[in-house]
Amino acid sequence: MVSGHRKDEHIEIALRNDVEGPLTNWLENVRFIHNAAPEVSLDEIDTKTKFLGYELSAPLIIEAVTGGSMQALEINRKLGLLASRLGIAIEVGSQRPMLVDPSLEQSYRVVRDVAKDVPVIANIGGTQLTTLSLEHLQRLVKVVEADALSIHLNVAHEMAQPEGDRSFKGVLEAVAKVVEVLDIPIIVKEVGFGMSMEVASALRRCGVKIIDVAGAGGTNWVRIERLRLRSGDDDSIHVELDDWGLPTAVSIVEARAGAPDATIIASGGIRKGLDIAKSIALGADIAGVARPALLDAVLGTRNVETMIKNLKVIMSLLGAKSVEDLKNVPIVVSGELASWICARGLALRNRRAYIPCISC
Ligand SMILES: Cc1cc2nc3c(=O)[nH]c(=O)nc-3n(C[C@H](O)[C@H](O)[C@H](O)COP(=O)(O)O)c2cc1C
Image (cartoon, rainbow, N blue to C red; front, side):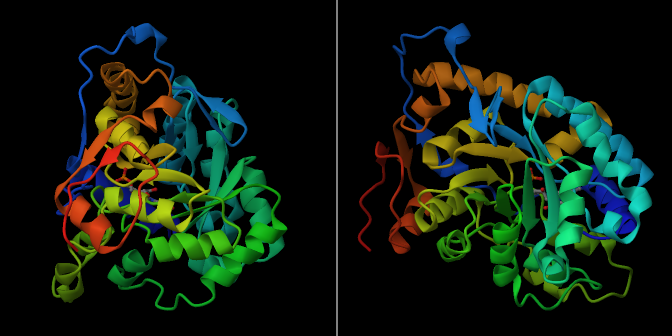
């Protein structure tokens, strides 16, 4: 989301520290109704999903992580190979550094070089948009032969950075202009603080058709920035904002209510096949992961592959043969999520969702 050097620091911190929580993604408030007689076999479960004109083998995106340095080039090569091997979409990290220094372009381009057969998504910050020309935007897209451009909104993250942006004016207008001038789909995403019904609706009015909620419950940028402070720096805002944001489950319901016809990407703390399944049953179309994929690329774990494998088992247990079936399996929504839905007067896309009667 920033300079190449700062991005390397973010990677180091995200790899070696506890940078998740304290909020959960709130998907624990969504329960499936076990189907003891599903009448399916595991090998007929089909997780194929149409996205950006491709057929993905599973409803999953590797979210924006990095670019802009030698270390980033190597990580992006591994992330690209992972996306290609698993047949899922991939988004590069913020391309702002390569606009300043064109020698950094290859650290992004490498993703397309190794992942020719899956959607590759370009990435830039909403606050930068206000200063970019059409030529700049076209360069972002061209370097990775992007199938879409994603624009990240990261107000809380900027505020937690001593050197971060402080003005967020004109972003929606700039987003609407980009939708108008670029001939590829525009995705607008958060980075871990979630998306409200009001913002989703404003984005839809700007012409945005794909919204990535990136809710709270996974990577926490306030924590990452707190770990970057030097001794003696003021950390009072980091302490106050430690549990800031809309959990991912809330964000899915909010975004769906604000933009009923949009493609909704569920991300932020998606860590299991069960999280993907619950997100889709709750109202998302597809899910996204960032930190688990980063760990796979650098530490050799197999988080993303395991999630997809387990998603298939969970779909069998529900008798859901396809992702479309999964959108309509019965769920029970309880706890804080049920109270939130009730308090905000929200409706669920899944018509087979049961919510306890709460007088509100
Ligand atoms: C190390 C790291 C770097 C990131 N850099 C970017 C970025 O450049 N642009 C962006 O839109 N999001 C960026 N993100 C945010 C992710 O794309 C994602 O929205 C967020 O981390 C929530 O997903 P997670 O909980 O699975 O990590 C980054 C995340 C991580 C972990």
